[in-house]
Amino acid sequence: MFQSEFDTAARRINDGAMVCALVGQGISRSLTPPMHEREAAMAGLDHTYLVLDVPASESATTDLGRLLDRAQQVGLRGLNVTHPFKQRVLAHLDALSPGAERLGAVNTVVFDDGRRIGHNTDWSGFARNFDLGFGDDSETPVPRSTVVQFGAGGAGAAVAYAMLTRSVRRFHLVDADPQRARSLAASLQPLFPATELTSGGTDNAEIWIAAADGLVHATPIGMADHPGTAVPACLLRRDLWVAEVVYRPVVTELIANARAAGARTLTGDGMAVHQAVDALRLFTGLEPDAGRMTRHIGDLIAAESAAVLRSA
Image (cartoon, rainbow, N blue to C red; front, side, top):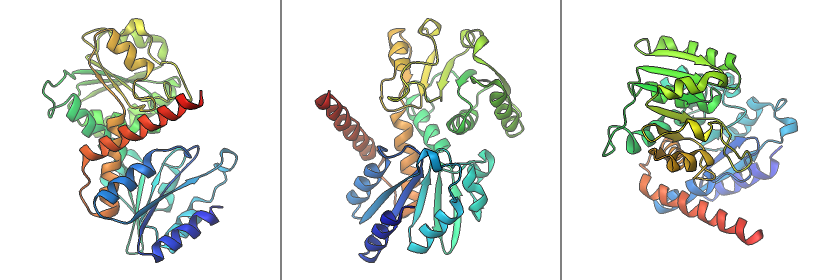
């Protein structure tokens, strides 16, 4: 598997380029590779970023350890890891950053002197986006005494961890699978003993939303391939801020409904940018320009949208 991609990597490395790759399922249209390559080029770095898209039929049986072996042997600088491998990759690493260890999930692997170091930039990317848009680095910080989050999966765990580092007093996790929400709350509670963590299913979410300052959405619902909204529009109101992790489209149905209700909103493209900023820094040792990368992703999303309109 991926012989062609590894052959390309070997040629580019022989040419003096730095090569990284994204590993996951259903990622052929990811905007991460062009975003990394554009920013690296602006910094004067010859960088190739490949996509290793594992077929859904093979994701459960993929030998992830062998895949990492090949990437390391060819000379890749590192890998970004996405669904469904963020937890499975842990067994094949030599060390973890503090955030990755606490979350039990890795989305960035750096090959360093023969060692494989796992990091998690999902949580730091969301945290930075939150700080700039809603938090202490924004012009008007939002209240965050009580926050409700929809989604307790892989992205949800990283986002919940990020929110809990931002002095939330009461945090309620909602998931279509209540047991998953309970498990995540139980794993996070010891790390944040001063915060009251609760969890449940979607059946009584409206009670929690009614008492909340803000709502975080961390499910796939709202993505281009999963249209709709996990949160009924009737539950949104002017004094409830809404933060989204989905960024394709940038204005999801949830964001549109929240804006119609007069609520402050935070779109998911900022998280995509800042997790990429952190990953690119780990790969290169350089300081990426976050503002420039924001423009990169804006241009890429606009081009993608224009292509869809042309083909319609």
